[in-house]
Length: 348
Image 1 (cartoon, helix red, strand yellow):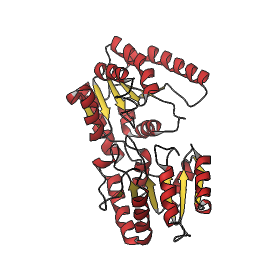
Image 2 (image 1 turned 180 degrees about the horizontal axis):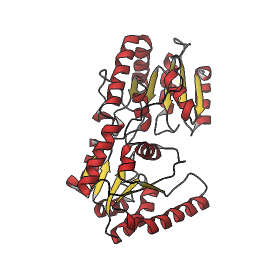
Image 3 (image 1 turned 120 degrees about the vertical axis):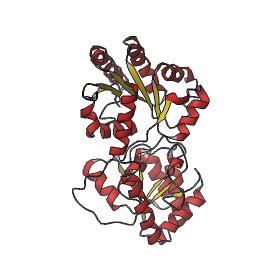
Image 4 (image 1 turned 60 degrees about the vertical axis):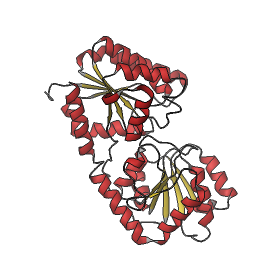
């Protein structure tokens, strides 16, 4: 059966920065992509408004003229603008009597399923054959809102094994990777590090990501730690390998998440983890067993955790080993795509 099944994937552009693109690219590199003859139709790109409209229209026409030859439509979406775009794809899919999956990547229930756009999500979730979410947290949230029962399934985002072209020596660096914005807590990290920076003047924070970079620089300067805070902007490829390899600690102090790809990258590179119990992270991260966990916004506790890891190399090694174990087992790309393969077969 697998040799005959064709899956059409609806998602944002390959050039768009973010978790959905990273997930679909990971699937694209896996054996699953060939076995199910997957095709990716891009419906959105990070450009100006007029170009976005043209890009969407082009994607829609591609979908209308190709969907009839596919057995399953796998729709990736997140925030309201993404969900609104997907309504028309769902309508056509239902019209053609296609099996569908809605893969929900949101980071906040308040901006999505409990917002004024709740009816959009209700329509998509009721009309699809399966709602795919990233964690137990999101399964509960969606069932509390819509009572969909077993229609909601969990498959975690995968870790992608790094391809090291060159090995870099560890530096005294704390890495933050992802969009630099308030939701992800970059201000919390800067303020926490400022409490201990003078004691550890040879340590730095490295921010890898675009967003509120100038605001971050201004805050670091205000707190007089700008010489210990580096903003790299968005990194990928060899620059990403170098950045993750050189880091000694990874920190993502988010207020809300789905299941962040930057955390999965940190696991794959074997970095000791400091993060918050938001979104899907409590499913797998346990304080002092495989990570250091603190409540969102708690500047003092984060400062304590960072200082503990800076001083305790043996703890860093313990958490590093735990990160690699999670990456190689629970979040291994082969494990995740096998679960997705089972789902495809179940639906068809």
